[in-house]
Length: 213
Ligand SMILES: [Cu+2]
Image (cartoon, protein in one colour):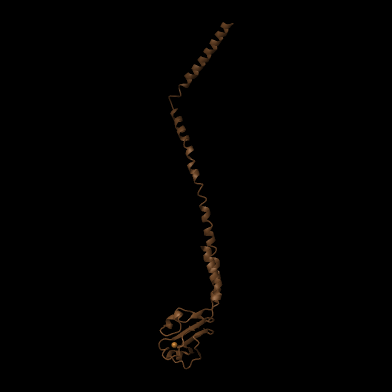
């Protein structure tokens, strides 16, 4: 998982320069036509030098670049540029606000106008992003490697059952405690008996030997 995220980040980082020049489809799928709120369409979008605006429209429409005054009054008479090819790709080459409107009578008044604020090309996004890539790879490898070894280590647990044989020693320990007092006296008589018996045996054998002689 971590590796895929890292590779995705790297792909995004490397792709940033290529994606840097963006082509905006004005009005998205609706295109350049009446009934579209281009003020809403512009909202949230960042236009930079190097980007392109693409106007797609039918024969009843056109694209005119006008000043702010013409834009506000929907007057396209002072247009600096006009296009009617149906698929106009307008390259954003300068910083500032560019005003477009459709010169077809009534269209601008019905909302067919758009003001685009163009910002300077930002090479900065590519430089700050590199530092983020080295950070992400390190954390992921360590987390993945330690977990696998932990599972094989579990087998050692069986030895715990072996301790049972060591329990027998405890029963042996208890008998010795019984030889406390009364049993100690008997030994002397036994020894005396043995001594007497040995003497008796010796005496008998001597008698037998004398008898045999
Ligand atoms: Cu129009």
